[in-house]
Length: 570
Image (cartoon, rainbow, N blue to C red):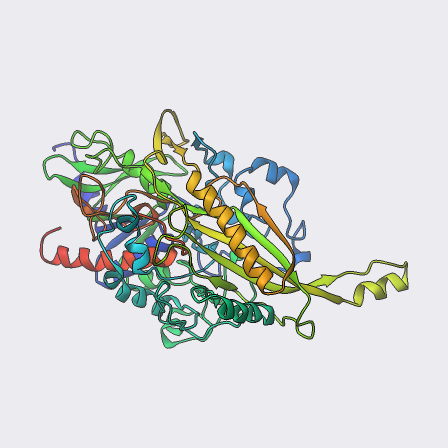
C-alpha cells in the first residue's frame, strides 16, 4: 500500500463507470447523472460532438469526391465493413477500418463496428418495436435457452419512459403481439402499402400490415425542445448524423443531457482492457483502461460499473477480466460466458410489381416503412420450426428512363421522367435460437494493437433458420399473389451472420446462477456491482429490432442500482 499514489486514486474515483457511449451506454449515463451519480463514461473511439462533427450532413452528392460512392481501394481494404448498407462516402468516417480492428472468425461472421462517442447510434436503422410476453415467454414455452427472469409488465413502464424522451413515431395498432407505446404521430404508408394492408386484413385474421414505429420526432414535444432537438426533416440521410436531432442518437440526446447535469466525465480514446476485481472486497472496484493513442494504462475506480460496450465487446471485456476468484472471466462460474450468442436472420427477401393504383405515386421521403409483426407460431405451434419472423415492407413507383436519341432529343427524353409500376419489397427478420455451439471466446495467441486478446467468433445458421426462410418465401409469395402482385421473385443473400447488426447474448439474463450470468436487474449473479444492459444481456432475440429493449432495460437497471447504492447494498 505504501507505493500507491492515493491522490491519483482519488482523482480517478467516481460513483459509477459506464463502458461505452452507444445507445445503451448513453442511456446509462443519462439516468445515472440525472440521479446525482458522478459518472465516468469511457469510449474506446474518438469524440464526436453533435452537429460539430457531422462533416457531410449538408453535402450534396456533387460536393463529395466520388458522388457518394466509395473507391474500389476502400472497399477492398474493408471487405467486412463495406457490406453494410450505410458504408458509403457520406458515412464511412463513422465505421472502423477492418485492418485496424481485426478479429478471428471460426465461422464467417460480419461484425460491423462503429467506434466513436455515440457508437452505432449514429448509424442505426431507428426501428423501435416493443417486445410482448409472446417474446419473453418464448424460451420456456418452446423449451430453448432459459426462462427470462422478467415479463412484459416489468419492462412496460420503462419502454414508456424511454419512448417519451427519445421521440417515437407510431400508430396505436392494438396488437397483443406488438404492444403499443408512447407515440408521436405516425408516418403514412404509401398507396400501394395501404392497398396491401387492406388485402391482408381481408384474407388473414392473424396477419397485420402496420407502419413501422421509428425513433423520429414527427411532432416536437417540450421534452425534445429541451434537448435542443427539432422535428425530423425527412431527409433520410440519417447515417451522416442529423444536425436537427430529428432522430434519436446518443450524440444528440442522452450524452448532451448527461453532460448538462455536471455529473458526467466523458473520456474518448479509452480502450477498456478489463474490470478490476478485489479479492478481499469480493467485488469489482474499477476498470483498467488503455489510451488508444498513447497506449498508456490508467485505472479508474467506482462503486458500480455498467458494461455497455456492445454485445461482442462486452463479452470480450468480461472474458478478459480474469482474477484468482474468476480465472475464466468475470462472473463465469458456470462456464457460460460468451455462449448462447444469437442474432437476427436477414437473409431472405421477396420482391414484386403491381400495375394498379397508377394514378398515384409518392411525394417526399419517409424515414420508415411498412411492417408485418410475427404471425407464425405466436399462439400455437403450427410449423416444423420454432418461433418465427417479422417482415419489413416497402412500395414505391419505379422510374422509367428514356435514353433514346442524341443531342436535344436525348436531353428532352431524359428530362421527361415517366413512372413505371409499383415495386414492392419485403425482407425477413427471423428469430434465431440461442445455442451453446454459437459462442465467442478469446484467442489464445493473437492480440490487438493494445495487447488485448482478439475475440474469436463461432456463430452460424442452423436447420431451424433454413426452414424459416423457406416458410417466409412461401407465405410472403402467397400474400403477394393474393394481392394481385406480379413478377414475384425470392432471393436468399446467403450473407453471414452479423450483417443484421443485431448480435445478442453471451451474458444472458436468467433466474438461476447455474444457467445464466445476470439476474432480473441485469446484475452479474456473482458480482453484484456490475451491470450489463446492452445486447449481451439478451436471453433470446425475438423478431423486433432490439435497441428499444436495450434502452428500457438500461433505464430500469440504473433505477435499481441507484436505489441499492442509497441503501448501502452496493
